Length: 300
Image 1 (cartoon, rainbow, N blue to C red):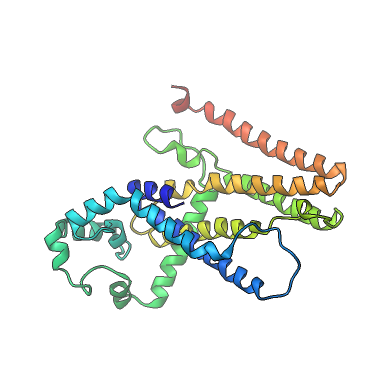
Image 2: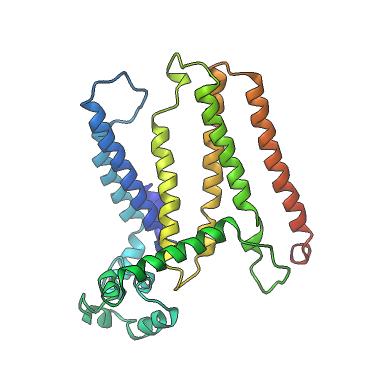
């Protein structure tokens, strides 16, 4: 995570929320492990050792700094701050024209260092000129826009002057919802339609909860972050990058539950229903791909 996050930071500073979610979720896992260590219970199948948590975070931070070193060094030399990022200042404006004007007048190391903390755009300076209701409304409206653009982007435009990737799968919210129903169906089947587990291989691994929280936390975190950023920049293509991990996570989770159901000798009809649902989703997506290939800018 540290090396990959550092390499991603070289290209885009917006990887920071992902790393923050990872640290928060892993720390929650440490707290839960600490509680279970002092709580009488049955044996666990988890291979995670809570004592290694803090050293693992240290190694992750070290690897991140090593991988992101070139950008940090350059930012420190040119701007006087290794973690300098203009988008980090832009998010405390209400209009991109104001952002650009501010950046145009603060584009050197001397100008940035001459500013006092009270002069730099920050949450404190933004809150001084906006009410809590205004900030909450900005967050709600922006998050709604970003979620809708991710799940229901609309039809693919036929004009080459627009971005065809925005609506390639205009029903991707429905596809994701169908996968979610399949996953929930497998959860219900594992609980109510199979016998109780006899050994560890038939149980759901304890780390599944941590993985689910990480996926959910990442999606929620980026939806709120880009939602707040909506008045300044669209960020729709970055939100779209969350779609594939969501799909893979749901498929991976459903397949994992399917394996547990097979080990618990579930009915053959459960597996037939699961595969039928998956094939219907694949057929719907394939039909959409055929429609896409008929658009002029994909044929030329």
